[in-house]
Length: 331
Length: 67
Image (cartoon, rainbow over all chains, first blue to last red; front, side, top):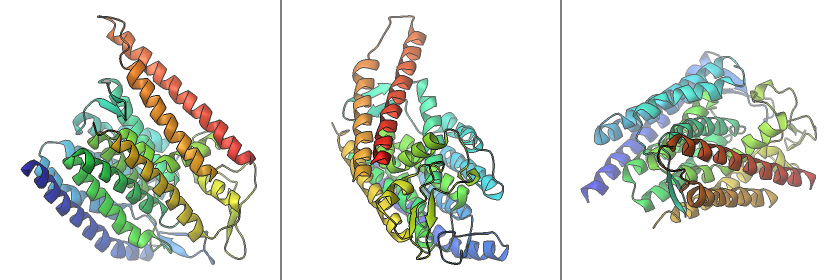
């Protein structure tokens, strides 16, 4: 029983610490960013009001605070290695927040950021495919780690298109993965999942419509890579991928339509336009990238809140599929 | 509704691909001393399966856009 309760107690402490730190750090961080003029216009709002960016440092602080009890409980280098990888991802995003880098920069840099996780991360080299079982891929698993870290970071970053989407979506996906980890009895990973869930929920409080702060690339990459670390730590890579299906589809549509790895800010054509009544609609431009939002708007013009709700509905649907997938792992 | 069908299709393809990986690719063994060949064949097969997954997704995406 101690094996069960100890990670849950430390996980609860970690989740509490992560929530409180993000909740308390965001308001002064937003004021600091506003005072220094580090704001970007919220282009989907009337008058394009400036919003503070990036909130990544607050998210990283929360995750770090939450990981302290976990590292103390688990011992070894596993949790610190994950935190190092998340910190590196946040730093990469911060560089991109300050100046727009080439499209290849983030995927390549995130592969480098995965190095601590590869060297000292808490994982085994079995890849589970529910309900069929697992394959042992001792060498290829390094490629899986690189793919997971790079993909989760970039897909969460690419779905960070409207108020509250990135943080709300990660909270939803992490919640689904936590349910699966609880069913499988993987308590240490569940504790880390609780930390990520708490940090994303606390940030969502300020990121939701109308946003007080944007996570920026630093925040989106930190959340995405932390989610990737959770998938690897828990040995639930496929379940985590299923929970992310709408974000993966969004990245896939984008890449397929622009046919190259490019920063979305560098695309000159608008996929979505806003009319005078503040409703969003598909631009109809065949040269603009195809995105999940654009597909949603095929049904007709919507407000930003309606689009966000639709993305969350798709997220909830995928989270349900992820839980079903996880239940298939129970033997 | 079509986006939900697309996500459901992606999910089904992932489960199916996993089944192929575990039932067919996993047990693949070219005998002692051929561990390298085993890994290369499995990696190439995995990449081909991902390519097939992407191809199916493109067809589904184009179908949604056409409608």
